[in-house]
Length: 552
Image (cartoon, rainbow, N blue to C red; front, side, top):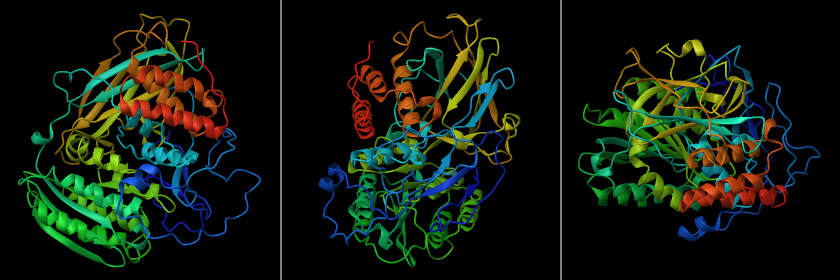
């Protein structure tokens, strides 16, 4: 998918710069890599669920002295000063691409907000792992859209002639009385596992020495075992590994050969350096050998993202992926571990492969990804999906989009079908939150705008024309935040939490205690939502913020 410009700031970073045309609104970003301190302790859940336990870890290196100023997160644009945090940050050896938050836009000057769909959730699960380990995630690790899209919301049936159900609603902001929040949601209907399309799957597993931990290769093997029960005779599965060299551990077999597949998974052992590029080439060879009009073909990479021998530059690996995508093979990435996790690489590979990027932090997350979320991960409902929100300047004075900084598309490119965008799977949901300031002409009966969706059919080629649909906002904003739909309120809490964690300037005055109250009031009996409340409270304590009751 979209190539993005990275400016290298860590001398130890092994990836070469990759460049392509950036949309005018896309902010510049940099690698963010810390020093040698080890990651936080493994969450109890992971340690308890995985066996056998990992060998004793070598003594931790002597930490570098604590600097008198926070570690630089250098973004080559004007960035807000992060909120001071007197708490540890997780896994400073990991690297992430940092983005400046989207700025406020005057609607009279530009009433269109255009971006590519994004259904990745890696940022949320990575941040959950950090908080469970007793540390705050680094600001660069937090993607607002990946937090919001980690949760499910209620949607109606798709509109006739479109694969999408669409929601656009608004309410007064609970955090700033001068502003409103606007939610734009797009979803495709789900499908039962028994009804999904056949798949030609090649799993590319990193078995290098850096993966020799229970929360890395141990979790990867557990994730693959969870998948096996969902495979059938119409599927084909191959297993390729890479370390210092590459190997086809399991040539393509029927998905019904559960015993063979499980035996191959059990044989996986970690050792050696990391030839990711060579592994990609071999995995695509296996996928090409089983190409079929009846089955979708996908390579799934399971790794911590480290790459240090063979074709390891980003440019080289992207060229391999480009060739595979041209041949009809997509690619998704699943990340594991902390301490040397290369989040920016895993995201780039998944985007370029017309797939998605996930992160697994626990056995429970592995089970969810390969059972509940399997169909959405593997089966595409629409490709090159672009969203364009058209705000009415008569009622919306200005707006800012929370998240999607690295998904920005020039307004003029919305109908340029050669401009790559995002893939949406069967049962996926894409939700975006805006903070807006209204004009004096706005009222509860006045819609704030409309959303356009442009997309291609799942098997459309690069030269095929896209389809387009427009959905107008049904009514004006709710009279009060409390009277707004519960999903809008919960999504606002999620976006607010992420905006605070990444140190956004507009969120510096927001209270995590208040955000927790909003989330708690709309969590109901949903286990995932209730877990979020606990994470917000954990972050509040780590930041030293007092608890507070918020009047509802």
